[in-house]
Structure formats: C-alpha cells, structure tokens
Length: 563
Image (cartoon, rainbow, N blue to C red; front, side):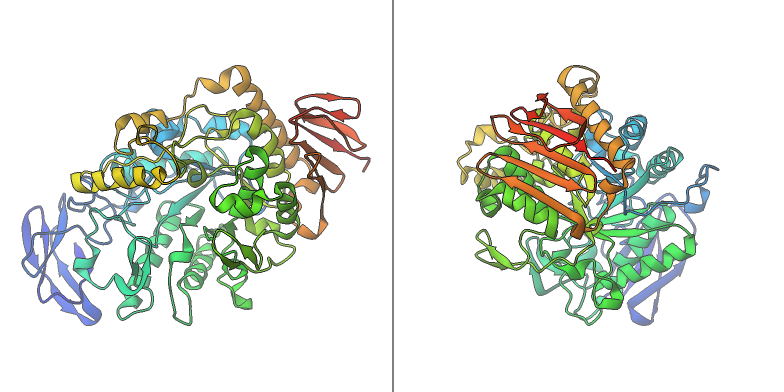
C-alpha cells in the first residue's frame, strides 16, 4: 500500500503500520512516500518522535489523538435509487445537530426521523460539523481532522448511510465544515508543517496559512478535504463556517479557488454542488460571480434578517440588536426589500460603518432564518423563541425573498433549550472553557448558577429534542402551522420569487403591524397587543384571532387577491 505525507521541515519520516515502522523516502515539495503493508492502524513518526495521526486521515476510530485507519470509499454500496441533486435556489433548509437531534445522538438515530422532515416539506438537511473532536459530544466546531467523521456519530459508514437514506427520500444534504481554525485539543498539524501563520490572527489564535510560505499545500489540504465530502460522501453542498476569518492576501482568494474547484467537480459528477458562506461582513463579493470579481459562493447567511426579526418578536435590544431595536419594523422592511440592514450604515455595536449595498435582485443568495445554532446556543442558557414568537416569525421567513432555513425542533416550538456544551478530555481546557463561559455572562448580569456547565452531561441531555412533543397540544398546532406555510410557499411562485425589486412592505411602528406584499399575497403580522385592520383579499391561512377585517393581537393572516 502507498503512504504519503507532507512534512517539509522533517529530516526523517517513518510510517508506522500496526506498530511496525517503515522508512519513507523524501520527494520534492516536502512530501514523503513509502510502500508498506496495509494494516489496522497507521501513523507517521517525525524525526523519531512517537507516531501521530495522518493529517489526511479518513478515519479516527480512537479519537483525534489515536492513530489513523484507511477507508475504501469504493466499497460502500450506494442505493440504486437515482439522485440527481437539486439546486439551492427555491429550497428550504433544515439545520440539525446529530448529537442532540435524537437521544441516540447518531446518524442512524437521525435517519429514523427523515420522514418527519419529508412531511414538514423541507428540501435540504444541513448537518452541523461531523469531524472528530475530543470526547463524545460537542457542537463540532472544535474538530481537528477535516477528512474524517466523528466516530461516536457512526463514523464514515454511518454518514454515508445517512446521506443515502436522505437521497432516497428526496432530501439533499449540506455539511457544515470549518476551515478557519482547528480545535485546541488533538491538533497535530503544526508538527507536520506551516499549516498556521502568525502573519494574521483570528479569535482562535494564529490563522490558517492561506498566503504565507508553504500555503500552496495548506490550501490544497482544505480544498481537497472539501471536495472529498462532495465526491466520496455524495454531500450536495457545504456550509463554510465564519469565512470572514479566512484571511488571505493572495490575488486569488481561497474561497474563489474553492468555488471554482467545486464547479469543476459538479460537472464531473453531473449534479448540482454548492457552497454557502457564513460571513458577518455584509460583503456582496462573497456571492458575486467569479467572472465579476467575486468569490462565487452560491449563498451566504443573513444575520441582519435574523436580528430584525428577533427584535420585532422579542423586544430585545442588547448588544448587536441595538441598531435593529430602535425601530424593529423599519429594520425588517429595510432587510426584506434591500437584503441587508447594514449596507454601509453606522453600526453602533461595531462603532463604525458596516457593510455594502446588496446587489438586487438576488434575494435567494441570502439565507433567512428566525433561529440558528449560534443565535440560540450563544445565549446564556440556550433559550429558544417561544411558540407565540415563532408563530409570528415564521410566516415572514417562509414568505421572504430569501432561502429559508429552520433550526431543528423550531417547527413544533421545542421546549428543550439548545445550550453550549463540550466534552473536553483535557481537565485544564475543560475548566478554562467552563470559567470562560461563566465570566462572559457574568459581565451581562447572569449569576454563575444560571449558566449551564458546558462540560456537564446534563447540559447536552437537556439540549436533546423531545420527540413526544410534536404529537400533541400547542406543539402540534405550531407544527401544522409550519407545514401549511411551507405547503403554500411551494405551491405559489409569488412566494418563492427572489427578486427584491418586487417586494413591497407596509408597516406602522406605532400600531405594531407589518404587511409584506408578495405578488398576489399579503402577509400581515400584528406584533402588538391590540387588533389591527387586515388587507383586502381572501384569507388563506391565519394564526391567532381573525374576525371579518380585524386581526387580533399577536396574530398573523395571509390573504390573497384575485390573480
């Protein structure tokens, strides 16, 4: 079997297979090669040091610090049911975390609830990161082996079975990947080569080396990892975490390079493939076509829509909500018609002007949502929106010109929080995370006892969905509301039209109502505690109180005029 590894600074490299070392031969560019027997486990010894896992390891059965194992991607038997993929435009995305989507916390457990997602009407399942990380449970953003799959979830085989099952049911799969940093525990890349640079810094420390000496191989490392998910696991699209932290001063930005490689692979496999970026820059270049000087990603998350919607339904005004909370309905109207709120405007949270004008008419390039893992889990206790709040928020999500995204459990108003949790095996790191979390929220007025311990098993168990809830009571009522709204969106081209130029919004901040016009449809949301008038037209769906032409407090109605 052929083994190879990039270790440009090493003077001697050996591959260790099942405990037996074999000398490797140096090759140009810092690569080392060897032919050795295939075995159960392997790793690389650098200059006589103990064996480390392969940077490109496809499997880590014993966790990030264990030795690697090979995977024969051609051995998996994919279903005969053809899957031709589908584009992101016009779709509805459903974000979920494998470890807390079901009590089992595995791909197999999640697979048992795919029929629920089909009945809901979503088109893509977006998996939070599944690369190996220390311990059993965590968000996944501290992963350290970007070619492998977290073993407690089910490993490579489990992920392939999940993707295959989703495709058989007509659901696409998006995978959240992290290229901007690796976790603090189990990261062996610095021993191999210049994967990181002090030329730039990120919130996690030294930046991934995308533009310093040695960066050609580092870029190839992350590019080929991304392509492996799309090719070997048949993932349909990737969500790229915090792309604003991918600092790259080269003429060809890494994101543009990656987007071009994905487009080439899409042609080769004959199905749509796409990239979605998480960015807080409000920068059109993220999704502008490469031919026009942009990076060419298909879409990006829109926190501005979330913040405007959140302030409208909750009245919160702290931190980055401040600018939106000055007039939430005006902020909503601005976002629904212009794409972003901060498009060159003053941001009091940042104490500077922020963003750039979004290019009309491409609303589908923005993902719109009322909740995400970040916006729930980064709160002190991981509290979600309530059922009454969700009932008013989701009609605007599902009738917006954006690509809608839901977060697991919101469709029935899950009572379970979704808190921040970790399972660090390093006691010092675990305590540092615990105390850091407490200090962060103590500065906001929270007592230590109220902030969940991220290392406690009870925190992750308490964040796991309760699948008995959607079967009864107000949870079932909200689920029906979501299904009705999704069904209406999918049957009505006016509601999926992404052209921001054709969106019209009326609102009255003093009276507390907003009306979104989408072709022949009018979506009226009353955020206030008193009734308001309803637009003329035939009522199709409503939540709350509706009588004649009056819409009750905290209610919503969708009406349609004659076509």
